[in-house]
Image (cartoon, rainbow, N blue to C red):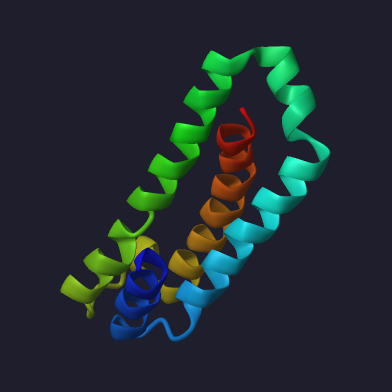
Length: 108
């Protein structure tokens, strides 16, 4: 349900298939991180900090949706932070970080 909502919100705000791409990016990085790096990092930093980092990743992911919402409220703004290219780049980057940090959360 959340995946469909993510895609729907971004599609309605003129971002096309960005919702699909950020979900794919998150799952890709989560899978790769879980296979290759999550266990050694958890062994090094401990469970408590792994949970903390994982929750930070998910929080950043959720907060990244505020920019498309602001852009839809101010469509005529010339601000760099409301530009479509910046928002797309930021959301893809945050999705990759969320996936990598989410692997820590789900591996613990």
